[in-house]
Image 1 (tube, rainbow, N blue to C red):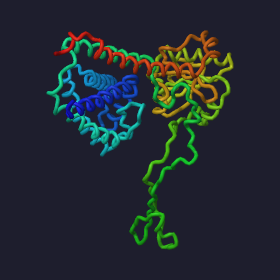
Image 2: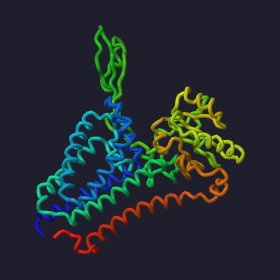
Image 3: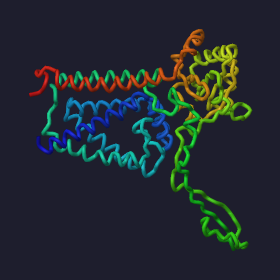
Length: 414
């Protein structure tokens, strides 16, 4: 095999796997990408595009996934090569601009599976560009693995299946949860700093005034012995980022402005946590259900909390229209959107461990909880998520082998 053919194979495999992975991790959680698009739009004063964030998130994930599939299996190969060239050229320029301006710290290119800064994303694209250029330059040496009709049909099947995964994730919870609040998580452990972990390093600048002139000093040379200088101000600049726990902003405050986070996380009984980032947009039926669930918890001896980022006006409106059997607690909006991709969503905790999560479309019937709680095991959901991932990987391997080994040779191009 010629050297250029070997390099083309390596380039095709690397690009195909990266694009499939990137599209898949975004596709199983399109709401995460939607929030990321919204953050970018607001950061660059393009808030009017916010209504299109979900459509863009779904489309971007699907395009990446299909480009990866096309490259890996050589479905409409020349079209895929052009697509990856245009895609990478555009996003390399975009990521360079984002790296310079840094409007949002986390790029979101690999969803929540791999967190990367804008500079890391830009350098990742630079690493991939030579592979893109190679397969583009030698594209004439390689043809489609299958005839056009079969290739288009296969791509349509992949698109429909992938869109089905995205549609399911929008209406329910993601099949795979890469966030720090996944089922089975012991929250206090992810909030703690490991022994010996690096701390943030700051450089402090001190400003002193003398004879009408303000000068800048550091902690090493400020005039602490000279009383003719008058202290004016100080500034702290982060020079080296230290370790940051996966969960660093989980705080729940009640209506008296009391932090009840430790109370929730140390509760030895079952605690239900209703997460409604915006009460005004929360599903009405689900909020009525939550009120009935809170009343049931009171009778059964369980705890119930409702957390929201809504202001007092929205809270008061819900009180007047719903007269809920629960109070309201305040939590950061980004935290709530990270905890569960639903408005509202429901968590079940015990001693700080997340036992279960539900989208409001999947809330169990109240009478079922008597059976659910005793048999609800953390490992069952974790094993279920692992099975989903293993199934996806095995399915791709089987399809790949089947297409290249077991498909009748008449379906291939000569």
